[in-house]
Image 1 (tube, rainbow, N blue to C red):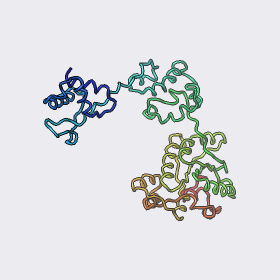
Image 2 (cartoon, rainbow, N blue to C red; image 1 turned 180 degrees about the horizontal axis):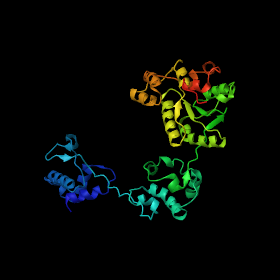
Image 3 (cartoon, rainbow, N blue to C red; image 1 turned 180 degrees about the vertical axis):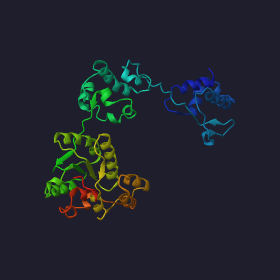
Image 4 (cartoon, one colour; image 1 turned 90 degrees about the vertical axis):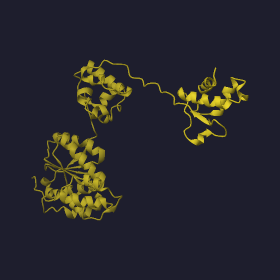
Length: 358
């Protein structure tokens, strides 16, 4: 057995990637009693090191510091073992999918994807016309866990259009309902995202002299508002009190305006009237004292303010980029009470001068 072979044998027993060359030289000496005293020992060891590299069993140092130049030829101070080869990832066994899930036979899916699709496949095979039920009910039926499908709408198969809740899961989302209060018969809805402003407006509208001018008042914020908006349709139907105007009053900051944009899109897809900014309230809010906040970039501020009409978008963009925001609390109950004058049509004041829908 050559010196290189003995070194290679030692390498197979090592657990560290970097192996001291002195240990390899010792293995070569142990297999050949004459090598330790041979005048050619250094040459033999250098040749063995190159042989290891040629075989792909080790990588030699690249920098000068990795070599011993005390004699000729130089010897490596260490060698680097090649990284361990990872076994190929286990692919799920081929499955027989129903026609509605045929995409699963041609796509590269993970084990988790197949685990998700398996029970859905069984449902479509055994109950292709199953009643469309709440998503949590279907989740419990298929996986024994009512929350297993909680965020299924964010799953890549859903967002890419391959998996559909109604078609494949025979299910529908059931978000928590939007908190709505029918304060009068008028055909409009005002959504407020701040509890203080909501409470103040509920007090003002609850005592409005002409009840025929008052409509719905709702509270909702963030992701809950976006998810719950479609439930407003059920409330309108149950009370036989539809609306043709929907208004939103959110904080003038990035979060509030981004939420408004997403809520507006959700209202559109749900078949609700367009979600408009409550301009009368916003115009009054802009006249209040802002609070300091980390400045937004021009692009972020411009994009967020795009939900507002140009006459408000420009000052709001400037506000956000200069490190200021306006929260509902800046327009407190006394100012709101002064702003909304019973001598003028209520909706016109909330909408900022737009024609009344009464």
